[in-house]
Figure 1 (tube, rainbow, N blue to C red):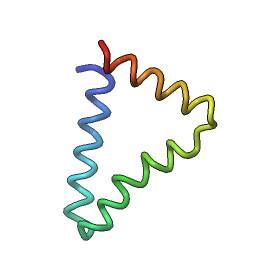
Figure 2 (cartoon, one colour):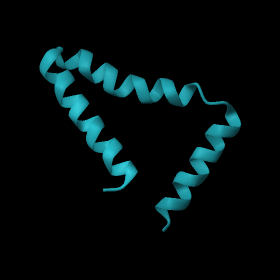
Figure 3 (cartoon, rainbow, N blue to C red):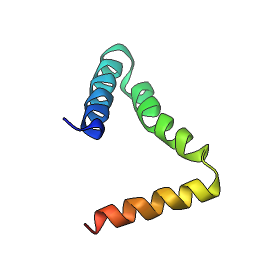
Length: 60
C-alpha cells in the first residue's frame, strides 16, 4: 500500500467515526474544513506549486 493510499484510508476511517459520534453537519464541517484550512495556511508560492503538481499528475 502506498503512503497516499494509507493516508486516504485513514481519512475515510476518521470520517466514518466522526459521522457516528457527531451530527452529520458537524462531521461534514470538520471533514471539509480541515483540508481547506490547511490549504489557506500555505503561502502563495506553495499554493502555485501544489496546483502545478496536481495538474501535471492529472495529465499523466
